[in-house]
Amino acid sequence: MRGHDTPLVRKLNAFVALSETELELLGRMHGRRRSFPRGRDIVHEGQVKRSAYVLASGWVCSYKTLAGGGRQIVDFQVPGDFLGLRSLLFRTADHNIEPVTRVEASEVLIADLLDGFAHSPRLATAILWAASRDEAMVVEHLVSLGRRNAQERTAHFLLELGARLTLVGMGTADGYACPLSQYLLADALGLTAVHINRVLRELREAGLVSFQKGQVEFHDLAGLVALADFDLAYLDHAGPLLK
Amino acid sequence: MRGHDTPLVRKLNAFVALSETELELLGRMHGRRRSFPRGRDIVHEGQVKRSAYVLASGWVCSYKTLAGGGRQIVDFQVPGDFLGLRSLLFRTADHNIEPVTRVEASEVLIADLLDGFAHSPRLATAILWAASRDEAMVVEHLVSLGRRNAQERTAHFLLELGARLTLVGMGTADGYACPLSQYLLADALGLTAVHINRVLRELREAGLVSFQKGQVEFHDLAGLVALADFDLAYLDHAGPLLK
DNA sequence: CGATGCATTGAAAGGAGTCAACTTATGTGG
DNA sequence: CCACATAAGTTGACTCCTTTCAATGCATCG
Image (cartoon, rainbow over all chains, first blue to last red; front, side, top):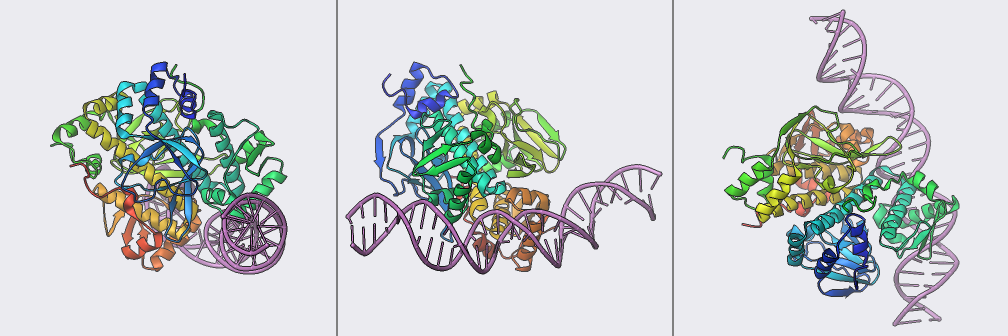
């Protein structure tokens, strides 16, 4: 049983109910556990060495930089999420990965991954599902940037994060602990920190959510969902599909 | 040799040099060829039946709709691209797919796909590479929406499309035929058709690109690349990596 | 205790949206 | 083959959301 109630296991269980042997197999895919300090990139654009990790604790963000000096955060990863799975097949990494807090992560060797796939197609399916879900989140993020205004975008972001954290046992319908600064929010939502600050105040004064001192609190979940046009279908959370 | 110079084969060859047997295998993964009229969705959000296709001719777009009535186009697919590969593992489709022109596409059955994977890991790698590349394009699109202004965004879009089309033999450094209306561009770039029109005029008057009568013409490729901050590393085009 | 990072607020400027009119294709039926 | 309908492209004037610039408060930390 030891080590079987990890965030990753919780998450995958939302898709397939994993057997004891599959859990063993999943455990064996975790290589050396490493620790990274906040702020120094784990992976940087153009890097040739490709590595993937499973995040055990802490938060990271993946982002791309622009010539003008700005940056766009593509996604945040929370415990249970994979890092760098996508560009495993690329010649060079196409994005940066930066720890937002101190993080612990297990390295995943490509050989072990493929090995696990060969032994259990069900496990392979679960991991590919997780990858598809990550991509679906990127797509929904894209929709936010393209068609939602600052309030809707911020509301949507806070809701999605809540849903993801709840899935791994780090959040509830009331709220969650969130280590992100307003600068990080701004870089993720395509806004300025100044404007994020204003929007956060508006949402708080409207009695919808508050985000202060590292704590997100939902005060009117239904209202927030309506404002953000939030539909968690894209997270595909409906509980184990494969029994 | 027949049927081996398809757009898909050309594209995959940019990543792995496929052997004759692998080409055979790839060919066998193509199921029934179907034709779809312009404008009527091939897949719609919430649809339970999941199907994937390889686009043989014509253009399609994948998009999501919002409660307010607007829509955001996530990506366009051109010949050689997969349709609906991502949500194959989802309970319901999370996006819509609409033909921009009349299209021809071969259905890909999940069983055949997995079968092909089992027979040739190299082919599997090539297809996963294509999927990763699609995701990388979505990410770059997200960066555009978040941090590039209307001119940069439009320029970047036209350049990326050019690179993709060139890879499958449908474009050159001088330009390409493009069946997209300004309304479609607007829905993809998170702008209004009115503003797209103005931006297109500015780019034309600056002597960078023109897009008229279904034809994109690069007049100052270097200038356009500089304006858009375009770096095609994310397309991972460097020519066959696995020999 | 000064330095640094993060949060907060105000005033002014600007880029993209909205509204509205008009033109230019394309196409269909009488 | 013309008449009319419809879709797509073009342009101008005005509005508004978000940015920019600037200043201030409040923590934490070496």
